[in-house]
Image (cartoon, rainbow, N blue to C red; front, side):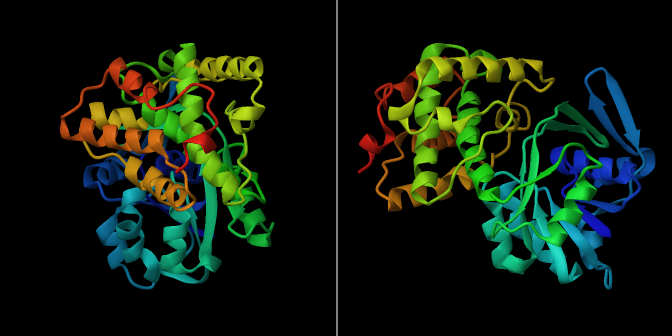
Length: 352
């Protein structure tokens, strides 16, 4: 099987690196020339806790790869930021044949964008929760192993799903699911919480630990979970994130929920990567985040269903303000969010 990983940064680099290490026919495709040159010259280095793994890989610049003729791939793993989906995939479509599969290793609901470009029959969903960061050309920090699920958009377990699942075992404990949308929507809710932590210049765990912040984050996540529920999606738990303990609010067991927060926080403290990728984009790379491309589709769908989406809209607005320099990272930002809701209030009560 010929494999192209488009976007060889944090996620694409880790998965593509392990596939290369296992001997698969993999080409890492990236827009950063210095990253491509470093990988070809010295291999790809993964920093894992106290050790480093160097993997010989084959890498190529995006423009050079898109200009090649007659180079068909069987599996194209798309691992770019959500806002770059169309511009990254569009020039690669001629490398696909009728039975090729595009697997989205992205955050958000990028599968819908991909399906519009290449067709639903060539699109496969992927939920990936790896804590990794691109550090410098040829070097990626692999800070925390999480879950990876793949699934057909229609929920069937197919031969090609099983084949790709076997391939991804070279990375680690990849799993198949007949409910990929349940994982994607669950991660959107969790992602909203991690996005809110990026409004404070502290670790994710330290921000989640106070009880009043846990109440705020449960209310924030519930907005997305309410939309998923009304859309007929059953969100799935992963890596100590349990959406069923949060939504619906009237069914919450507060003692169990607090214990689950404690377990999740302990997991986050065990990771080498202690702050979110959104925080890194804002504080280190000084670039636009993919937050609007994750949460605006949720907001739009939620509003069409009659939900106010107050907290989610406010988080997106705050992130924009941090991006443009009109807002600073501060605990005050969470206090401002807290003013928008009443603790333990059912998210349905906030709908318009």
